[in-house]
Image (cartoon, rainbow, N blue to C red; front, side):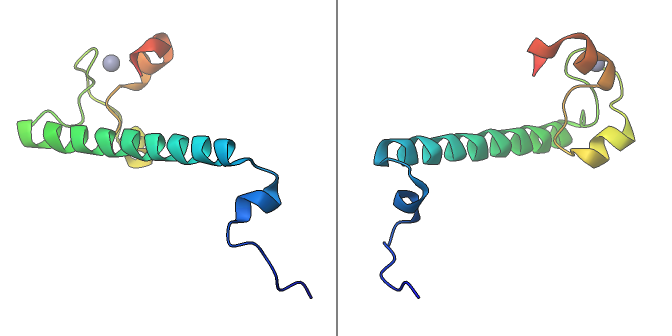
Length: 85
Ligand SMILES: [Zn+2]
């Protein structure tokens, strides 16, 4: 059984330090994006406009909000214009 495993897993995955740094940055960016969406949803709750589409100001469907509580765009606008996201 191999016991001399390197402290950093990426080398065993064939990733260079550069790629590992890139992956970490990408993950961090994704977390920051998620956090920003949640904070924006909380701000909309405080303003009393949570659950309304940012584009057309129509109601966002309950099922859609259940799937993603931080959703800010209704199904119609989401299907019609991908650049809104
Ligand atoms: Zn809409």
